[in-house]
Image (cartoon, rainbow, N blue to C red; front, side):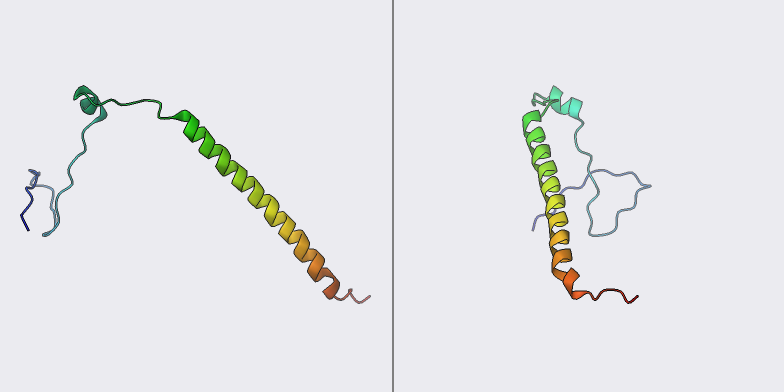
Length: 85
């Protein structure tokens, strides 16, 4: 296995043996200056659709749990003896 080149590091930063130092990712401005296209608004319609799916699932999950609690109450209620007076 070929040894990967390591980045220069500050003498104050200690990296344990066998680990590679962290390398900073390029800043967005430098990536844009290099010719890459960056969108400030990545597909809002997809985000809104995902939000509506999520809130719909949460809503129907809560309704389903409420129905389940009512059905369990109806199924178990006759089994509970009435309180002694």
